[in-house]
Image 1: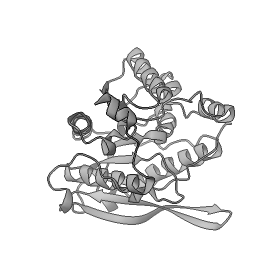
Image 2 (image 1 turned 120 degrees about the vertical axis):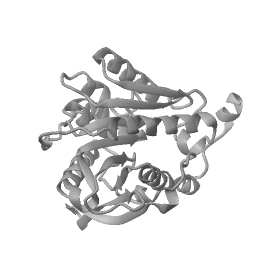
Image 3 (image 1 turned 135 degrees about the vertical axis):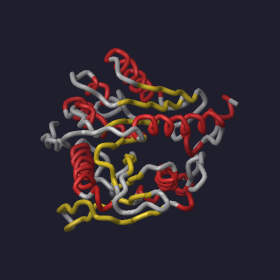
Image 4 (image 1 turned 180 degrees about the horizontal axis):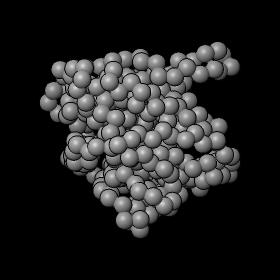
Length: 297
């Protein structure tokens, strides 16, 4: 089986983009979706650009109810394709909603080059601000948020880990870039480290931290896995609540590429982890705002 996986290439991108998550739960088809909600408008060289989010709600969700929130952070940006429409994120949105959460997918200005790190961070933080300000409109519990990052989306975790607010109860990552990769251009490595986009470096700062969950792919790029391993080790050193699960034969994107028992086990455990840390009622007296940090690098 190992040899087969080494020889197996991912499908063409168009097919990859449509692939659903290899895990399902009852009730996914009954969930509600509110699409194309504008959370922010920005100026671009081509004019104004509306950044949009999709909100997945449990079946029968009504105004006045409060549900914990999971924000899914993709490794892509706002340019074509729109990652909200990828099979993986549409599936995760419905998986979340079918299990009592509100799932959120969103567009962000994030792509190639150091500058996109800052715009991706700002858009992610502004999304959270928007959701807190409209919690009643969408039935969000402002005391119970989690973020779940995938692949290059892991670089959006660094700014959140540096000074996490109390309502950020859990943080998850699957095959995520957790530190600057040695194969990156020197400018990008410097921007990640000095700009606060390395989750490993952010963990070294003092202060309380949310519960962490890590999904690792054994057949991933060795440099990505080295960053994940450093993240886990730093979490141990800090004494953080963390669960780490390794798919020994999993590829980057095992949750859509590898429909085997281990993939399903890791995904199921990730949602069980979220139920533990989000579905417990916790009162937070105040909800602090994020301080905007100037992009360094």
